[in-house]
Length: 313
Image (cartoon, rainbow, N blue to C red; front, top):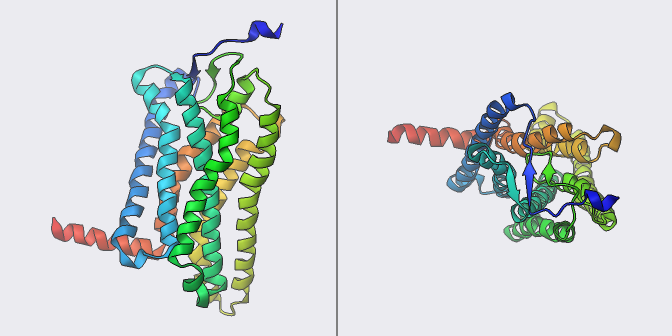
């Protein structure tokens, strides 16, 4: 009986952000505006760090990597919205779908690993300020950044290889605006027991909980060190140096927990789409804004560049 419901799929159909026709145009235009702000904000961060010698420090080196990840992640996940909107077709080839899944999963893992590296940087800066230059030298920073980029690929490859080997689906309609692995697993009629086990062990425990635990431990020691500072002014200034990173960490982990670690009873496709939209569109846009508004060095560098532009024109 189950074989009657199986379909040979040559392409998928993405239903999009919303099933309400009247809302598709305004929401698509809003996402386009958010995407342009994301590109502009993160590109500004990259240019400021390259131009200003005061920003040539480990913290801003990692921030540049985060900006690159944000731009790549937004482009990889949101471009189908624009393609579907301007072309009028919601079709996506299997190859394009699998590529988007791989990029989305890999870049999300890379972000978690990079934020962990940034928390280690803040831990050394606050807990061992006298040894900061020795511990966080150029070689260490480069190795941490490379590891953050490569480990995401290594971790996701077995999961992606299994998903891409699926040959049987119950249909070709995906109620989402992107090819995400959870809707595809639910749509597949292949044996997904290995994938679910790997996702639970490697994805949740190694890919999610390990970076979270390392980041959490770093901030436990940071908070203990801050509480030992006698003056209120000193405590505020010290906490201020890691407040931007902590805000970004809370945003990203909160959205991922709500989206992927909820019980099945609370899992609906429509709520998942809204959470995915916030995670893929809003969070990458907020990151440069958070680092700009909460960071004196970035604001100072931006004001300097604006003054130079005024003098030139």
